[in-house]
Length: 452
Image: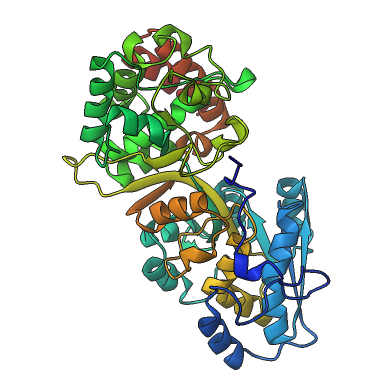
């Protein structure tokens, strides 16, 4: 066995493609499964931008910075423009300093929307070119969600589309070992009702359905917030989720309390979780998935985001030794297929004609495929050819993204730090330890009130 989760098979047909260096194209035009036709059509009508420069700043460092440069090389090749990307490990501080000084790059890559929204409200961002909102709504999975997530009030309070999402991640995943399911004759659940029934069936068979760990040093508790956020998206409409993350709806609203209690259905029973309910708060989240791979298995399922394979044992082969399925929605709720995650957004901080053309280039499948063929990149762009993704794990997550009906960011990241990275975390630890859900929600709301 060998690990192929995030460092494995590249596209065989491109194994001999020239490496990117100094602006050379990573993949020869016409090779592989890339969407060359749409790229060639755009390039044939693209303006001559020779002598113009597009500057881009973001948080990507090695190796992602090199991969992104291999993407922008195709824009430079078609237009004659020079495109310069500069990565920074202090991007959030530097972009504000540069923008306030009138020295901002043309494009800024934000790792999440909060700072971008703040800069837009101060007049430090420029709206995206006309038509990009319509493009995203029509061509992204859960398209309107991405328009909403990239729309912020300007300095006059009017909503404008500022953010184009590029390179996102998925949290709504349940990991499992196919062989264990096959041996026990369990089917992958397609609805939340089926997931609950499977949980009960595993218990009835004398086994343990879940591995769950909330430990994370000073950040202990955050894995439980992801559970609650996913459940909120599956029990309430997206606008209710939005109201919750801004406190327009109080944290101790009965709908939030019900979501916490639903998490408790999974975590509060000794028979449902490896080590018993009392071990959940003290088990490190990095150790909790290991129970999937023990013999006999300590558990059958583990809900965690796309990064969790980093903590799997070595020599795990995706699709054989481990796989995932979508954390399902309730068939009875009729709320579609919501997905929880995060992502980077590109914004315009210094507009120019060349910058507008670059944003049009980013609408091409090729602009996403070149990144996805080399790195752990995901996009909700429906026209991307799945065959170009680096591996099967990414292809499966991309399928979840493009089939999503709603996408929302991690709620705790959208809340004030003292709540989202404070009392929400500690409150979930208290709840896992047996504290009443209403009491926990009341205390979290009190902490939010104290910030006002």
